[in-house]
Length: 604
Image (cartoon, rainbow, N blue to C red):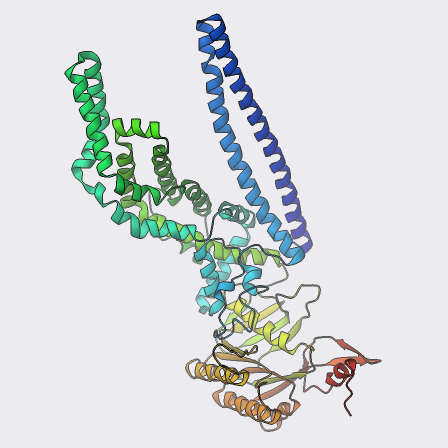
């Protein structure tokens, strides 16, 4: 059954209620455990008081163990319930975020502001990055590399095979949408850079830091030391005297060995301090990706090492256990005992070195896979949340045809849809019209949907078929006091960028909104005309929005290369009404006089 946006929102809201109820129940459970622990503590005190008052009693002494054992079980239970509560909160955040975006347009993930670049061929003009952008609307990545990958796919077109493979992968992930919410929840409480830190540690730092564990003699002694110390202890118990002295010397030697390597051990340990929970979260996300039998080529290609005997998720679990074992050194008394008898810190370092030599490369691939899944899941979530959007058809030769295409960042209730088709050969399509009639929005609508299409994502259209274009835009031209650049100079720089780009790209598509605003009207017209003629000569298609009706007259000189479109207004009793519908031919109705009249100025 195909879901509507209302039914999707309803599902999110039901999931929110489920998680809220679950959180309430888990909090009550934690409170009960806390009271039970307090009760056991008081019971233990009372038993001790009774023993003090009535003297030694074998039954009471034996009972001392019972509250202690129950207390330890409750501590373990409390930790498990707390983990469950934390996860429920993270999953609640994921569902709440989706509902908030559908209702209010708010997305709690990063908006991509860091990727803004005024010099990019189209990103600034088409609102690709930053607040209120396509990136802000789409992003569901919580790792830095995932966010970078999403930005890359919005910054340049993929080739046809990659686009089609990505479409297939996004569709497949869409069928697993419920599991993707859990995937995202696993990563929700961690900072974006933490995955990078672990990857850098595994790839660059650990190999050098673990060099001291390569000594065969050291490895042999670490394996033998439990048996040696146990034997010396037994000799001391049975023989006493000199045997105890030998046992003491062994203990001193062990502590000296630890002390001698302490600086190296600390470097290894502190690089992973507190990472076990994060690694377990990564292991959980990877485990799901390993368990699904993927059919799409793009996703299957993310698993080049599928032949490994031990799944990456279990390899990470092993690493997490080594780190947890290493954490025993945080308890001073326990650490002293373990290092005296087992050389515990050195043993953990050697175990880490053995793990690294076996699994580091595969785990690095697996951690990188998390980022790639995140980026694909961003588009799968977009596909799920926008059931009226569709995957575009990618053509081999010059082509663009759209049906009911709309701007993806305009809410569905106010979004106006249009049809548009390029001629089989490149043309200059001149779009005239009144202020606020929809020219700029239409240009951005075409451009931003192309960006989605070339990323392998669905587009905001009933139907779209398009060949791969290099989009070049000229819309928001800003001056710069810091660079001593006037508006006109900035416009010239942008035009030069476009001219240079079309020399090297035969598949360019140019979007221009009101060219040469920074000069007089005559030069503006002549400059616009000669620029359009240059694009015609280069056989580069252009959508050219302008208030200058004279430019529409170029069709008389270029009947095969120029097409006229317009957005108009309807004026009823002095009131302006916009339908934002693209129409053929030049505009005949303008609204500047009416707008000026509203502020008290009348044109004669």
